[in-house]
Length: 86
Image 1: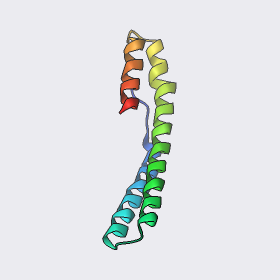
Image 2: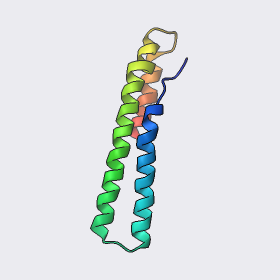
Image 3: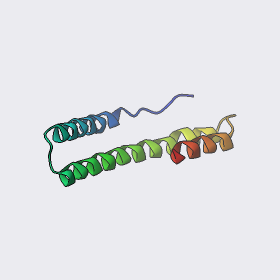
Image 4: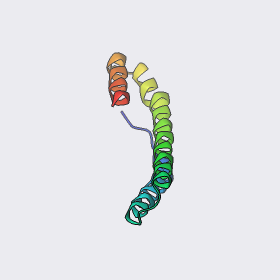
């Protein structure tokens, strides 16, 4: 089974990486707690957005392909649920 490409998410991942480095710098510079928390929330939100896009692609491609193959659909659904519960 081939897997869909997620390369379009690389720019977003790189932005989050920069945000995290910025947060580390804020902590090193002893910035105000609320400012650090706001940046952490922004990074978490960005990661959630990326996660949602990858999940959507998975559902539209990988899970749909399961319906047309010999792979057990229930097994794939359980795999997804296990991942989402983490």
